[in-house]
Image (cartoon, rainbow, N blue to C red):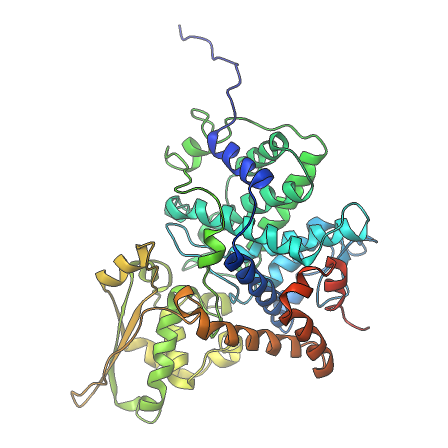
Amino acid sequence: MSAPLSNVRPDPDPLLREIAHYIAHHPITSEEALSTAHYCLLDSLGCAFQALEFPACVQRLGPIVPGATLSPGARVPGTMHELDPVRAAFNLGAMIRWLDFNDTWLAAEWGHPSDNLGGIISLADYLHRSAKKSFTVGDILHWCIKAHEVQGILALENSFNRVGLDHVILVRIATTAVACGMLDLDESAIIQALSNAWLDGGALRTYRHAPNTGPRKSWAAGDATSRGIWHALMAQAGEPGYPSALSATLWGFQDVLFKEQTLTLSQPLDSYVMENVLFKISFPAEFHSQTAVEAAIKLHPQIKDRLSEIAQIEIHTHESAIRIIDKTGPLHNPADRDHCLQYMIAIGLLKGQLTAEDYEDEAAADPRIDQLRELMTVQEDSSYTTSYLDPAERSIANRLTIHFRDGTQLEPVEVLYPVGHRFRRAEGIPLLMEKYRTNLLRIFPEEKTKEITALCEDQATLASTPINTFIDLFLPSH
């Protein structure tokens, strides 16, 4: 006869306690992190505004059912929507992520930490407008750094994609944590909320991979950050938690969904992730391909008039790129194309650029794209993989070699670090601000854009600006 199960509740899992303590008590003192967060905020909003040019994104915005608005509620920048903070978080989170153009973090698990801004901005705007708590843009930067840190440090050693779970699980965890902090919940309540967020399990990565790649990958982060706001509000209302949500034998997250591995934080939580985050500046493309596209664009002038002479396009890359975006066969939609290494390289070679419009059906109908894809071979360069995994390097290297039918070849073009890498910050930030101005001009006239840009370039003044005043800058005039 088996012994009865013990119903004595253990102390909360150490991981839950460590995250909760960081959220409730750890100061942010890094000037580099605060400056980088400033640019992260602007870039993320710019990505959101660009997404509004795409009907597939716009049709997913607004209340969950017609008329389900809230006043005073959270305003969705660039739109007329005024919503409860959970639905507003979905809206803004989906907009930021839609074109795969916001920041990136690459480790054992990759992801896009600025996905959390959909929840952070929406909750702050709602709380401020409803007079429950005041927030400045500086407060947003503070919580953005902490969200980046929770998501990114969890990603360093814990590979969720290896067990089939999508990386947006970490958006849900990070947003839950910082939303609790924004609501001034104590450590105990943060632990309750985090335990429930982990018990949600995780979305499957099915929608990111052949043969099922589709638009859910563009709104999955909006779903995750909105769920984080929901969990925080539930905890504020007194929802209890589950202390061994991660470690419970047989029924905990680790045993059920993580192959009995222990979730770990490989280093103390501070501001490392924001300081080292990767910006997507030049191209709206899956980050493992960024250097490959840059190499293709460099090759464009040399091959644009010799396309019919190309015999082979040799691609040397790192293991993660092969596993995630090395794709042959038909590509069914924009989401499929922006996760195909060969497609993105072909566009760079053909056009000397890569824009979000290049993933749409009209651009994809160019027969030369598939002709070039057929000529491509993809091989791993083990040194690139090693450098990619090295915390001191974190390169995302690619090398392209063009071979011609007459037996000649062009000098290989190698790019080790994308322009959005920390190693290229001095080069990248002016380009990032130009990207931001371009995205503002998509929805605002030039004079309004100048007004917004002038405020945004003054970091000290912007940090002291109330969140509702800041968001009102981005509301349509009609």
